[in-house]
Length: 91
Image 1 (cartoon, rainbow, N blue to C red):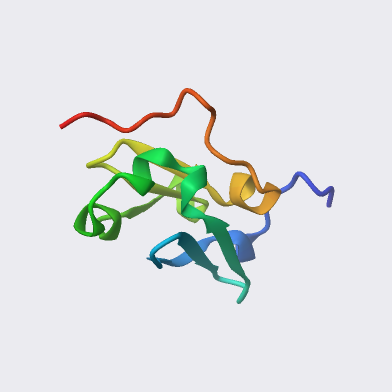
Image 2 (cartoon, one colour):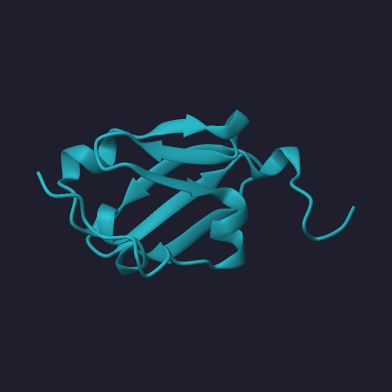
């Protein structure tokens, strides 16, 4: 297996937020903790909008329909912030 392959343990188990961090728990027991500032749409979303996430991409992604944000476990594990063009959705 190469480092770019996804393993079944990298599936999302849970998602939670603190005031300034996003934490994603994976099926294999790892936790990914990243600055919320990396994801402006989530940073500017309400706490209720952040709580309304869905597992996507066969368990390897997270989708927030109300703020149109999608993150993958692969990107989170690489430490990849949102592209600079990612901006809050007005509304």
